[in-house]
Amino acid sequence: MNTVAAGSNHILIKSMIKKSGLDGIYQKIMDHQSLSFEDGLKLFESKDLSSVGFMANIVRERMHGNRSFFVRNRQLNPTNVCDYSCMFCSFYRREGEEGGYTMTMEEIAQRVRDGVKHGIQEIHITSGLHPGLPFSYYTDMLRTIKEVAPHLHIKGFTAVEIEYYAHHYNMSLRDVLTKLIEAGLEAMPGGGAEIFADRVRKKICDEKSTAEGWLAVHEIAHELGLMTNATLLYGHIETYEERVDHMLRLRDLQDKSKSKGSKGHFNTFIPLKYQHENNRLKNLPDVSAFEDLKMIAVPRLMLDNFPNIKAYWVVIGKRMAQMALSYGANEIEGTILEETIMSMAGTDSAQGMTEPELIKLIKDAGRQPIERDALYHVIKSYSDKDIEQALNPKAAIPILN
Ligand code: V47
Image (cartoon, helix red, strand yellow):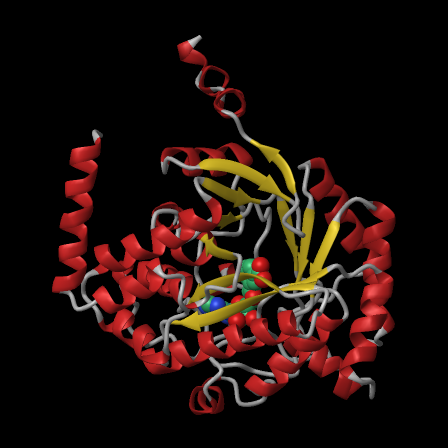
């Protein structure tokens, strides 16, 4: 596009943004200023998705250019036996209930070996809150994984699990985290955050950590040098105000951890769209595609101190995850290999996604695929030639040879 055309396009977009009443927010973004609670609300209430997405894309490209991360990973859910019964959860079983399972160390080792065959770099562990296991089950599990595959990065245990272990085994949060780190834990996922508002937590996950409890675990994890993630569960009974409040509490903790000089911090924000099947919230209406893209774009604009926004294809679908790369996301997770929590709630994620499939999604969105490890070190930046080789259409469709 020539400079005159590019200039006139920009004037057009600016006038669109002004017409939607978002020009104050646009100016803050251009001036690198943080957005307020009211700004967040205005973005969610706006029907001008193009302008919201345009602004989110400015921030995304300012931080990452064209680069889009993915990871070759495996999810591991060692047990689904759980002391809590959250209304949105289809995964948990009570102790002794039919369908409950707990993996042995050998079963865990076998899944790790299988993952290594697929070239995984990260293992992501989430469990139910099993009342009958000793704490050593978790440290043994980490050591087993490291023995089988010393190069694998282990991302594991939501803040809710950590808090449960502290109560259940009569340890401090810091002791639980320290012992897990000594056994091999290197990063923490963002699960269990749901929505921080007490009003919602009381209704959908009454037994779970409070917002303060969840944030306290991540603050200590950051002090101990762990990179952690944060999620937000949307599409159930939460309001826009509660979504914005959730993000601002995360942004405040990130500022706090950074200002204290903690070695760890939040790496990635992941919006989790509520999945309806086999749980007690199933009669709620589904949210729209419009809302899915808003849930990528608004966090990118509000969470200016978070390096990454992840599109989790398991909950929004592969096509929407691809669209998200133009609306603020700079990452698609991941190959996954096997997923249980969301597939029990109705997604078709049980088989994961292949690496060529992921690379193609990213490339077709006009972005550059970058393979990362759990700590966001670059494993491989894909050149056009690498992409061509990875996709190798002739090999995939013999008739073309
Ligand atoms: O904590 C449970 C959520 C979380 C449902 O950090 C549900 O990189 C939607 O946290 N519909 C576990 N969500 C998954 C998780 C996660 C996933 C991918 C990447 C990362 C990361 C973290 O899933 C739970 C809960 O918040 N969840 N049931 C459901 N029916």
